[in-house]
Amino acid sequence: MELIGTIKNIGPVQNFASGFQKREFILVTEEQYPQTLLIEITADRIDLLDHFKPSDIVRVGINIKGKEWTSPGGDVKYFTSLSAWKVTHKILSNSAT
Image 1 (cartoon, rainbow, N blue to C red):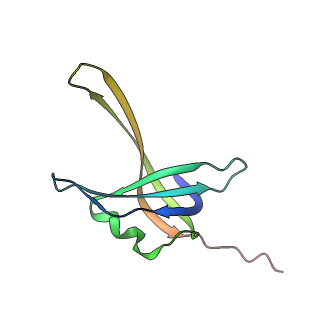
Image 2 (cartoon, rainbow, N blue to C red):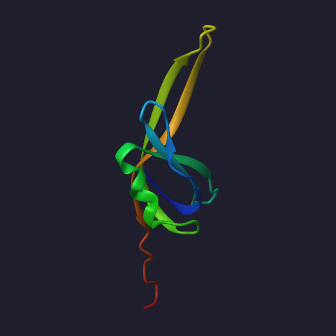
């Protein structure tokens, strides 16, 4: 799936005891009813955001991931995340003719 929007914020790299790393950013989509989405980048792709800043208009390739988790008390919860695998600057078309 692909999203186009403006980067609102880019978070720092988060390191976990297991060795797992992730970085999150906020994207405001370009559509009739813009959506503000939290998107994560994990592992070896966290440096994808190094070339971007807030207010950049980007094209983001994402995967939607879901997970079921059972708490120690037996409660079952479900989580959904948007995971980016590609981030590029959106190329603006030249509308002057």
